[in-house]
Image (cartoon, rainbow, N blue to C red; front, side, top):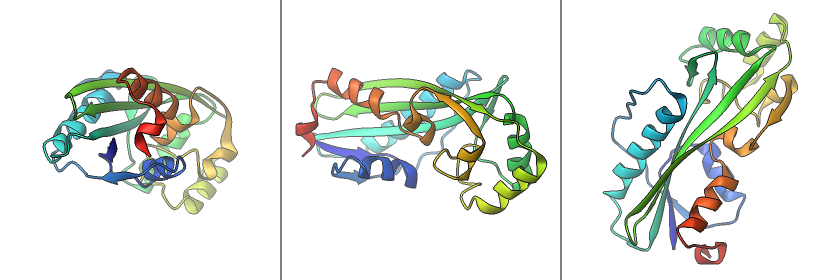
Length: 194
């Protein structure tokens, strides 16, 4: 089977690269709009849009399409990529001293039998209290601050994280453990992707 990653995310590519599995990237060109205020349904809808769009571009029935979308959620608000440095600073002030959730929605389409699985995964991230000076230091030293859904655990934000409850990779944008469980449910094992 061939894996097609329906994402332009560098981080998701790095995660798959770490598994030494061959894959191809095909990106959705459809506008991604979700209506749900429920964060899990929201990311599931967006991942479904990406996967469905890419499935129309793929003629190889020997393929599995994987699409994902991630947000940060706290106190009833969905946080996506900040549009400005000011918004990034405001977000960090909201996350300081409390728990937020990294939520990723994933859609898998098995092109051989057109089966589709959509799921989401939640990871709780607990932040220490972050003083204004440290927030400014972070903003000045995190090169990808406007590219991630609020922050990236693989970056300098790790200095301010007290603990994580759940899948680390989920917060990065691809919950590997759950993804492999769902691929197993479709009847595939790792050797099917060599």
